[in-house]
Amino acid sequence: MSSLLILSLLQRPASTGTLIPSSRYLADTMARQALGAELVVELGAGTGPVTQALVDACPHTPMVVVEMQARLAHHLRQQFPALDVRQDTAESVLVSLTDAPPRTTLVSSLPFRSLPSGVARDTRASIGGFLLADPARKLVQFTYQPRAPFRPPAGLKWHFVGSVWRNAPPAGVWTLQAA
Image 1 (cartoon, rainbow, N blue to C red):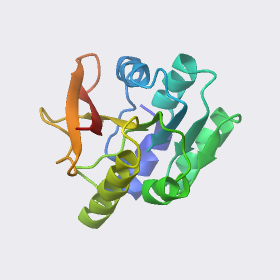
Image 2: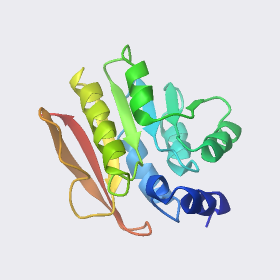
Image 3: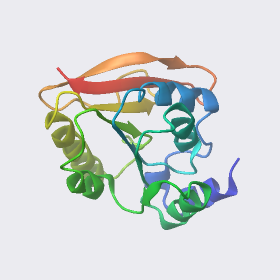
Image 4: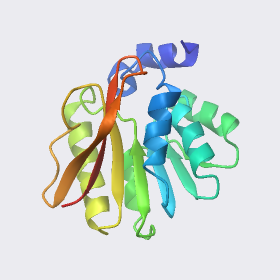
């Protein structure tokens, strides 16, 4: 268990969402959904297990890594010095990426069910707007619940990728794309 993750959970429980980093099985399943992307934007990178899987699966794909918590963003910059790591909100970063290529994949570990309602609402809206700007864009999201991560915005549809049982707790991986 990562002491950095525990400290983040104690300081900001609503935006951290877990005590245990994603397993390599969950990270690898998410990273496979980004294959073929022209740009990968990881939202809520935490301590970096999904980031590492993305680097391994898509070594030549430009990547933007987003982490709101300063301590975690600093850790990610040290661990992945070649990546564009931004300490910011998902909403702000997505607004700044209006010229992103068509095949941009968002890979999210954001804890939508524990985020404050206003933050969750604004983040979902910014993701929806970003995806609707080009039908080739998609979001990859996991959830610990046996249902889609959140209600899809109009014009977008969830697709269940599969369950990852070798994760604590088991997780479902979903993609959100133009309907």
